[in-house]
Image 1 (cartoon, rainbow, N blue to C red):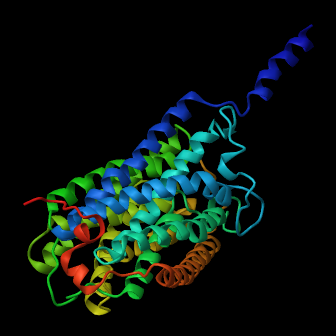
Image 2: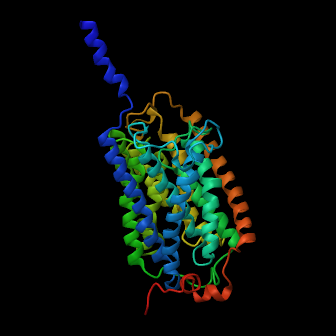
Image 3: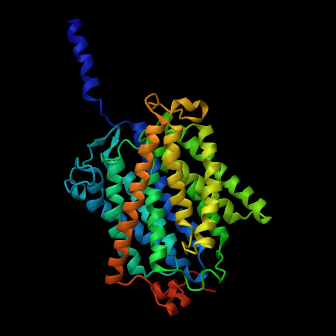
Length: 424
């Protein structure tokens, strides 16, 4: 009898090992909303305020349209390419239109439908980030075609490499240093070079038209990033909480470092510099957010503020590349730094600066892990650069990339949409 009771007691433990957890599900549902909130309205307002008045509506429209198209593509084929199959380099078509996802199917302790939706928000914001590299001069049709092809050719395969069981699965990238920030940053840089600078760059001043809008969008990004990094734990627990804590510390450190650096260098701190430093701190901590402690996050944020500040100067003033909204020096450079720093701070040997979550740090050897991180960074940069260049050339043949000089002078709001952002 006692043996029978013991066997019956063991049944639920086995049968419900992968049962959906209500707390985890609630947290990832919240995180999903926060990450979508980062694009709509966060990134849209952040970017919208940075362009000139005649192009504000075009940027908002591009963010909205990308959100719609990427959602449909992710549902039809993107999720399958990223998270299906056992190939080391790309997924397969076995889960087209989420054919294997039902109301009862689980991914760990959350519904698979929720996991697919959470990952969809990442697939939305990544191509939306690239807008900053060619803002104010690319045709709307070209933006949509480029973004659609780029999602399937660049984003989905690299997601599979890192998170879908691919060949970079042992690289430390908690929430998207390579998958999101390096890919978006490199793609924006390539796009800026291929399409060329805005008319008048770099001699003609092109200041942001509405810093109030930009700061509002930046604040939304800061809050939304808690879902971006904290949600990547895919559970409600200590790992998610620590990820949120280190995310906030790095953002604050990046913002203050940039602010004081600019204050010392130019005599006055600017709102634009401060919020840009915040975004640099957020982007840089992203890949390391599950592998470092608060002290490590402080160091990463400070490094992000200094390095990304100088990267903006080099790209814009030294190399004279018109990456309009500084996507590569902030997201690309930040993603590279953060991915490498994740490998450095992962070892328990660093004491207070290392991670304080529940993952295994005992087996991490700094030199070996840094080699893995470096391999991931280089492969992501090279593949993204080559693929993005080819896609841009293809789109140029199909639709043309750039509006005419007269259309650029008139502004994309009227040229592309026959509407104005401001009727004044």
